[in-house]
Length: 289
Image (cartoon, rainbow, N blue to C red; front, side):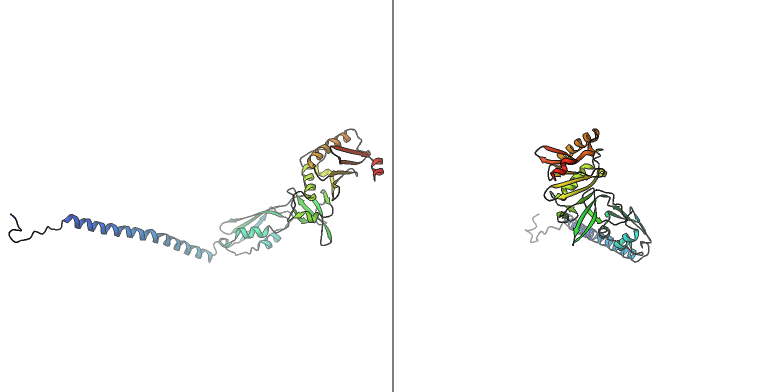
């Protein structure tokens, strides 16, 4: 039957499916919103709880430093290290600026490396490695000459004192202080050349070990002049080709020792000429001078 013809209009009913879909959409949006809020709030809650715990620990006595030890020191005293570090009993281990403390301790003249370790809950350990002297450098600063220690890396680190061991090769000469850049000699300077010579003696050669060298005189005109502990004659090494000349010098000294003729040597000139070496007797060296 045609409802329109009877004067009544047909109005289709809203299906239940559409209503359910709408409600499901609203429910899903609500769940997503809740999860998003939870996702945002949870880190804030965790951070807040962590911060609260940290603040409480800062004001508690749990991590207060009760003991501190210094290891590795031989020349410097624990009192010196602790004073330089600025550590006070009762400081909270959580607030220690480890990098800053290590940097402060490294300012001590004899300290090469330093490590600070926290042993929870209340102990601090400072481990240091001191410089090991390799040679002595005679430097003039502000019109005053003084011997300084240099280590095997070429770092000039501390002035010598009467109570310290002075049984090391000595590098002398004018202008050595000007050759220094920070703690090291500038590359290609005569000071650096003298250090290179000493490093060659440290390779373990029995003919010319480091302990056989008494002095290296740095002369701006002649270069390096080396003196041995057991023999008074000068060895003129020049300014360049130090490695080549060192190897040749070792061979010459070996022959002189073997022939038992080293006592008659007045001087050795490794820089006599291009690929030439002069071994002069005592009388010849005296005549040349």
